[in-house]
Structure formats: C-alpha cells, structure tokens
Amino acid sequence: MHRKFIALIVSLAMAVTGMSIVAAPAQADQDVAKIIAGLTALALIGVAIDRHNHRKDQVTSHSVQPATPPRGQGTRGNRVQPRPLPDRVARYALPRHCLRTGPGGQAVLSRRCLQRSYGYAGTLPKSCRVRHWDRERTRKGYSVQCLKNRGYRLTRH
Image (cartoon, rainbow, N blue to C red; front, side, top):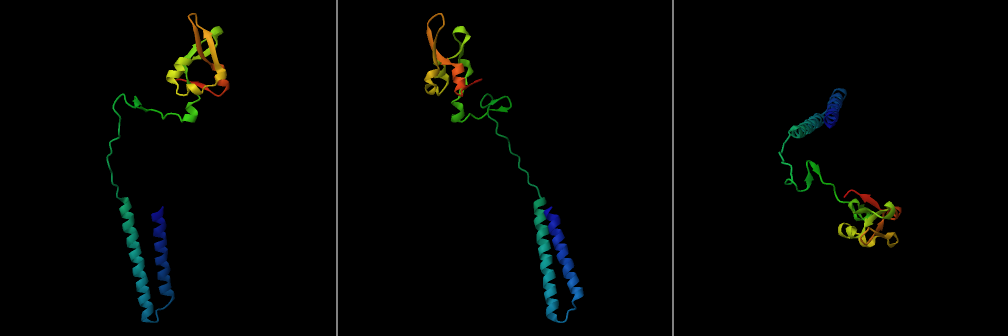
C-alpha cells in the first residue's frame, strides 16, 4: 500500500513538473537550471525510495528451536501448565479433596486436611466451624454450605 502511494506521488510530481516546462517557456538560463535541478532532485528521491523498497523485500530467516522443558517437568503432554491464581482469588478456592460427609449427610471440609493443603486455613470464618462424630471420635471441620454462603467455592485441586 505504501509503495503504491509513494509511486503515485512521485509520478504526479514528475507529471506536474513536465507540464510546467511546457506551459512556461524558459526565458533565461536560470529557469532552465532550476528545472534541471528539480528533475534531478525528483530522480534522486525516486531512486532512494526504490532502494528502500527493495531492502524491505529481502527476507531474512532465523531458525529458532522452541524451548521445551524436559518430560514430566512443567507440562502435561503437549499442554502448558496454567498460571496460578492471584492471592485475592485463590483464598476463596477450597480443595475438594478435603470434602467429607458429616452427620445426616452434611458436607464438611476437614480442618486437618485444610491446614495441610490450603494456605489460608487460618482465615476461614469461625462461624462456619462445626464438630461432628464419625463413630470413632469428634472431628473438627467447616460447613461447606456456610462457606459457600460467604463466597468460597470448591475446586478440583
């Protein structure tokens, strides 16, 4: 697009210059010298533009080997590992593997499991703490429904 535009401008400039030569007869040597200098300048500009365009046509290729991590480190097959969530989002994502069934089928998150696998266990709301009996002893945990009401959600990992 740029080449065509520049070629159009140069050709129009040369055409206008040619018309002015025909329309105005050269009465003195100074007029002829100015015309020759103008044509020379236009020719030099045209050559410079042509050389610049030919430089752009040359393609240089570089063969770059993609960086691939060793197998088993950083990828699952050909997929790239996703970036971790920001802290303001990750603190509301609870690990699903800590889910247990409490009395009456109530969904409960194990407190001990959360302390091991969830970095923000100390910041969970105290009002969601529950105790339940699992036939051996009293277990401590957090009510899933209570946590969901406060903006928390369960994640796969």
